[in-house]
Amino acid sequence: MTRSRTALRLRRVLRAWQLYVLLAPVLLYFAVFKYWPMYGVQIAFRDYNPSDGFSGSPWVGLAHFERFFSSFQFDLLLTNTLVLAVLNLLVVFPIPILLALLVNQLVSQRFRNVVQTVLYAPAFISTVIVVGIIYVFFSPRSGLVNHVISLVGGTPINFLAEPGWFRPLYIGSGVWQDAGFSMVIYLAALAGIDPSLHEAAKIDGASALQRIRHVDVPGILPVVSILFILAVGNLLNVGFEKALLLQTPLNMSTSQIIQTYVYQAGLQQAQFSYSAAIGLFNSLINLGLLLTFNWVARRFQQSSVI
Image (cartoon, rainbow, N blue to C red; front, side, top):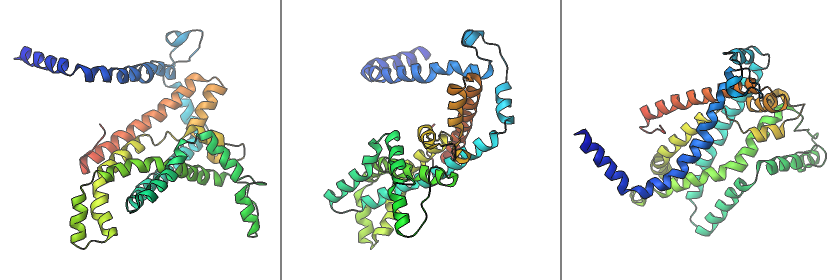
């Protein structure tokens, strides 16, 4: 019986060998660039010395984790990272959904294409250029924003030097750059909704707002659920490049997050084991959040990513 099942599976595999050939490069990519580097995670539990290598460096157990948890920067780093991540999730995540629902209501196809292009275009701009635009627009002397503030009688603000403005700049630029890209995914989900549902709703006298509420939103809810789980699972992986580029000595009290600290400790100060321990802690928190929200979504929405 077992042999017959094995033979049946083997015949199915051989029958679809082209699909497995297409899948092979993807599996090879993940094996080489995602799983093989995990071998180096062990340096978080060693006192890593490049001359001794991974296997030759002495074990120190959880010493680097204890050092990080007891450091005076731990509370600041965790608070800044959590606040920025939660704000990013609460503000950046729902806006593409609203944009997709609004764009989907546009009747003129030409105007709709123009709006999509305008909203989608910032996704092609690199983070370095986005930060450059922020510096130009919010410069205390020559920036457009401060010129407007001066024209209305206000006092120019040094946005990049005041800690309170780091988060609004970070979140606002994230909305401008990423909302259009995420909107396309929801527009694709909206395109998959059966048009007969809208026709039936119109016959029943439903307004445009009621059709959005009772047809469009339930139709894209599984996609929203899956993307939300993925966003939560990546919650603490705040965009490192933009945070580092926007960071100045005067706004460190809000801009110093776990990722920028790992970069400074690992690459600038050569504390490889210590930075690896901090990065591993960050990844474990993300994994815990991903599994938790995936379980919640599977229980209530019958959808999950695992």
